[in-house]
Length: 425
Ligand SMILES: O=C(O)[C@H]1O[C@H](OP(=O)(O)OP(=O)(O)OC[C@H]2O[C@@H](n3ccc(=O)[nH]c3=O)[C@H](O)[C@@H]2O)[C@H](O)[C@@H](O)[C@@H]1O
Image 1: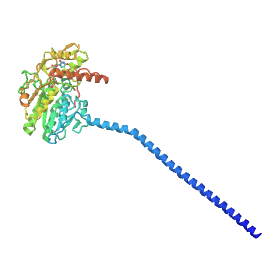
Image 2: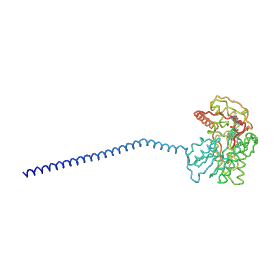
Image 3: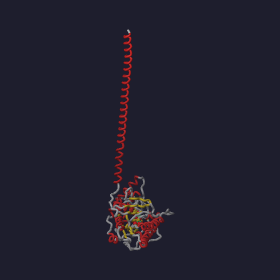
Image 4: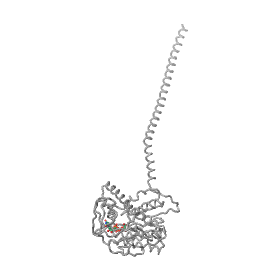
């Protein structure tokens, strides 16, 4: 009896233990399944996250790569946009200042000196010069553009100074005669002061106008000229004459090396559309089918040189040992009426020729004697008139298109003196 009861008790205890053991085993199993589940979902989550990140990264890469490509192209185009420039050794490379370097002649001179491999600083007050004329050099390591009026002193270090700053077309220089005088007198004084301080050589862009309305024909450098000192052209003519005087005073008294170029009528691309000189006026009028305005009878003469010839002459003179004045011009002389007809034909224009009253003190004959330049500089003009005119016509045609796109059609400016007070500074 007792043993049966004991057996029942033991088996009851075992059953409970078994149940307990089974319970524990079940719990352990559930816990391990749960653990695995948690682990797996964590891993899954992580890989999903990593996958997502990868996807985002590759998306970004897809967007950024073409942008990088564009930046590389832009960088390439920046370095390739400049005209080809020669490499000059430190010894041969000069630091050159061009005053009026954004003007018609100045910008062509800038091109030549840059392409020859020099360091060029252009100074311009943009009265008649334009940034557009030199914009193709902006950013180049050898080039600098300074907005500055030479009437104020300038302090920079240079080896050569081409001093071109001054309005050169009669309507422009007559527009503000006091400013024209200041530019040529005070401006030249400042540049000579700079040349003296830094030991630079200065080339003055003088003019055939120092001969005035000449009584000697053709004009050679030893002719003293025939200028009306109180006429409408005097601000320019006398301004350039005193500029020459100052050059030789600085040469004698201070030992400054000077070069003086007497520049005769010059034309070519980059003349301002509103310049007012005969070449731009006639071409513009012929292209627009308007009458070609001849002042006076048209029997007055001029001889026209193409701008690249002038630029070569200026550089040859600067680097020569000729300190006395030298004429730079093309001796092929034409009457203004012949010239009007020639331009009409080259443009193929049906424009009329209109005779207007003659301009006061207009020189009646002008033609350079260039024997000195030929002999001392081995220079003479090489561009035939018609070839140069065709280039200028092409340029003005493009300019007209450009202006038309910008809703502005310029009219030629007449060589008339403005009435009333003019602004000057
Ligand atoms: O072209 C230049 O390089 C020179 O131009 C001008 O001298 P100018 O000879 O009077 O120049 P223009 O205004 O082009 O006149 C030339 C001739 O054409 C005449 N002209 C001008 C403009 C016009 O529409 N019609 C016309 O018959 C003038 O009366 C003058 O007889 C400047 O004064 C000089 O400094 C400069 O060197």
